[in-house]
Length: 194
Image (cartoon, rainbow, N blue to C red; front, side, top):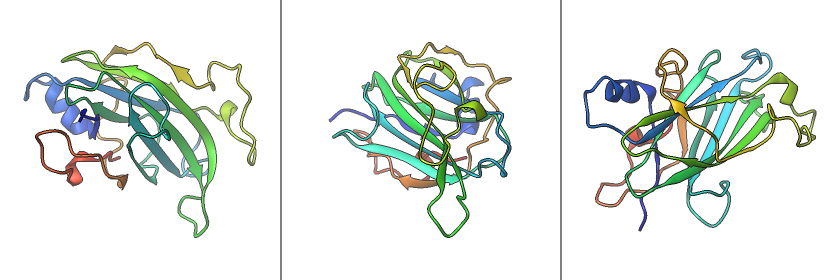
């Protein structure tokens, strides 16, 4: 059984970068946006899967959904347990998250085949911009690099000045991560949190 990546809070990430633990193999995703919270978007959902294909195939998915925990930028870390070479995810900014009806999608992007660099913390900055907003059920057509889905993104070295700590701390787990080989089943500390 292959290990799957885990979401970790940015606080754990910063402790690891400071040298409190062995070097982690992880990618910090930084979401940037010019949308106003909570007026334009008030929720976020992120679903991830191991490997180079977008979540939703035959493999297990994991992720989280919850109210936006503040203003942008927001960050979340994904770690590899060692056997995972890459992961993919879909993120959606939502409007009406706190209403009694299903929320609508404001911006939706998918990033596939994000490659881990062994024992390094890398960073991926992903814009979720107003120009990419869906109008009802119609989202922008492909052709705008600021809005398009991304395959095999170029990662940057982690920069704490760009990736705010603990911004994703507190999102509830929508889908629990699968247990990693040799580890107990996932607990609350293993999920993506705002």
